Length: 603
Image (tube, rainbow, N blue to C red; front, side, top):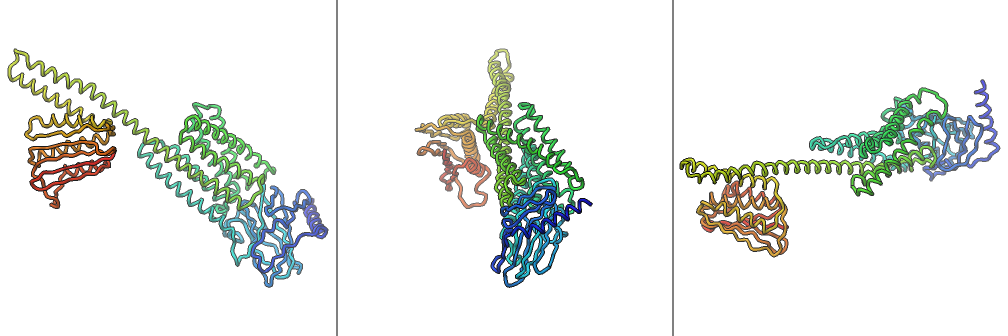
C-alpha cells in the first residue's frame, strides 16, 4: 500500500513542478530531420524524490531505480511527422515513453529491452529505439521511462526522421569491419596452428590467442547490441551478463599468456599465484552473473563483486606491462616489443571501456564505437605479428638444432670412420711390403689400400656436400684443381685448370661453393661420357669487383640446338643448380667445334 502511495505522490509532484518550472520547448520545423534532445531534458528519480538536472546530449543515470526523462516537443512543420526515438544504449533493461499532447491525446509506447530478441522489439535497430509520431502544431510532453540494474546507465536520446535515414550508421560499419577483420585474423591463426604442428613448433600461444580473439569477438558483438538482437536475445539470463563473461574469458587468456611467456611459475612465483587467483575469481564472478537476471539481490551487490576482479585484473595487466618493458629494455627482442605494444593497447582499451561504461567518462555511443575500433584493431594485428614471429623463431631454432645434430654426426663420421679408413689404408700399404707374403696377398692388400683411400675421399666429399663451408675464391680454385688432378688420373682426356689469382679474394658462401663444385664435376663427367673430347679447360675467375665466372670448354663433337632432347639430364641438372644459387647459366655449342658452358654469379 505504501508503495502505491509513494508513486502517486511522485506523479503529483511531477505534475505540480512541471507547471512551476518552465521548460525549454524543442521546436522541430520542416527542415529538421534529426535532433539530440538530451540538453533540453530534466531527469526525475522515483525512489529518492525529485531531482531536476540539466545535462548534456548524453544523460548519465544511476542503476536500480526508475528514471523519468522529460522534455517538451512541438512539431512546427506543415505535416505530421514520423520519427524514431533512439536511446543509443545496447544494455538497458527496459525503456518506453509516454507522449502527452496539448490536444488531450496520450500515447504509451510498448517496452523495448536488450533482453528481447529482434522479433519482439518494436524496432530492429542495433541500439534500442522506439517509433514515435508527432502531429503538426501539437505541443507534446515526452516522458521517457528508463530502468537498469546494478550498473550505471547512459543514454543519448536522439529523434531521427525515418524518411531520411540515420547518419550514425558509420558506427555500425565500424563494428562490422571489426567483426570481419577479427574472423579473417582468426582464420590466419588457424593456418599458423596447422603450420606449427607441421614444423613441430609450440602451439599453446596460438590456442591462447584464438581464445582471446573468439572471446573478444563475442564481447564486441555483445556490447554493440548485435548479440541480443540476433543471437542470444531469447536467453535474457545470458544477455544481461554476456559482456562480463566474454570480457572475463578474454582477460583470462591474456593473464595465461603473460604467465607462460614470462615463466611466472619459475621466475615470479608470487605473481604466478596472483594471476591464477585473479583468473579463478574473475571466472567465478562471471559465472555467478548468469543468475543476475533471475535473482533480485541487494542493489549494488553484483557490481561490487565485479569490481574486485576488475581491480585485480588491472593490477595484473600493469605488472605484465612493466615486465614486458623491463624485458624489452634488457634484451631488445622483437618478441618483447610486440608484447609491450599488445599489452599496452589492451590496458588502454580495458581502462577506457571500464571508465566509459561506468560513466566516469561520460558515455557517448559514437565515442564507445571509436574506442572499440581504435583500440581493438591494433591488438588483433599485433597478436598476429607476434604469432608469425614466434613461428618463424621456432622453425629457425629447430633448423639450428638440426644443423648442430648434423654437424655432430658429420664430426663423428670424420673423426671415427674417416680415421679408421686412413689407418686401414696405411696398414694395408705397409703390410704389402712384407717379404714373406705371397704376390696374391700383396695384390689384395694393395687393392684394399686403394679402396680404403677412395672410401675416405668419398666420405670427405659427402661431408663437404652435407656441410658446405664458406670458402675464398682461391680456396675453391684449389679444391677444383685437386679434383681435376684426381679425376684425370688414368684417363686420356687432358684437363687444364685456368685459375688466375683473384685481385680481391672474396669469401663465397657455402651453398655457392657447393653448387659451383657440383657443376664442375657434372660437366667433366658429361664431357668424358659424351663429348669424345681430347682437351678440356676449366676456368674460374673474378670479373669486375663482384662477379665470378666459371667456364668449362671442350673440343669435342658438340651438338646442335633445337633438336629434341638436346639437353640431357646432366646439362639440365647444371642449369638447375645455377638457377638455384641465383646465377646465369649459358651454353654454346656447334657441331664439330666443341661446347662452352659458362656460369655467372654476383657475389
